[in-house]
Length: 385
Ligand SMILES: [Zn+2]
Image (tube, rainbow, N blue to C red; front, side, top):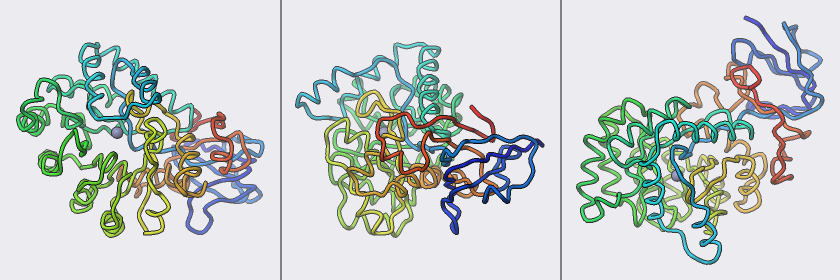
């Protein structure tokens, strides 16, 4: 196995408990994994060496929430929203119509381009949901396409009730938990529900998650984005890996998150793009909740693929420190995908050598220099992308 020494690292963030970040550091990768980290002067010999010239190195971002399989776009809806209209879950139907009309090749090309856009901004692991097909055929093909781009695929047939079932949502839940789940499950690792007014209620979410579990899919949930409700408590009760959005939380919701260990994934690009109030990350962190950050990249409520933007928003608007925000977008993002045990989202010895080299001396610049393309180079499994 060839080994490569990365040296001249201005600041190395590993999330090692003893030494989360250090200056004047080096890192050795071998076999796609981190083999050694420590002071540059003590680095072991390696087959090849790369001098990073004082730049900071951080773990690659783990974006645990995105919707990349779709056609069309909704920039006019965004403009209308900025002119004063409010966001409602029903806008998803516009994208459903365009997605159903698109070919597999068109959907794959769009999704692959978005993944490439994410990688250029430092993301090395991405979760992709279905949810713009909403028919047996279109959900299964959306997931088959997503599976070509990532292992972290999520069946979101319960995204919104499609137009043709508007008069009979119960029949749609039967479809989702029956034939649609059967067709989708071979391509999915996760199952998700948009639990919100205008989408699915807590009882419907419970039924969908139970059916998914019976088919071998682990659960995650969109909840408490637009209103208070029982979605977060359901996620905690079921011990789901993550519940996402968490904007409108009661004290009971916060306690349930802290007690259950379910990750609260915050998606500040959504609040930015819908002009909604931001979730209160400080309140969650102070209560001992695991907080992740993800993009929620989708054509309706948030069309950014940029984790650095999410980090900057989390620091500026949600009470996180720059270091907390980076951890939320890396190590805790991996936890939200149940991938923490393998060290994903860290640069500890043994972890996948997925990392971003920043055009900056420290990770603080991710929040300090918002909107600036600071990711100079990305390595995945020990190789430059
Ligand atoms: Zn989402």
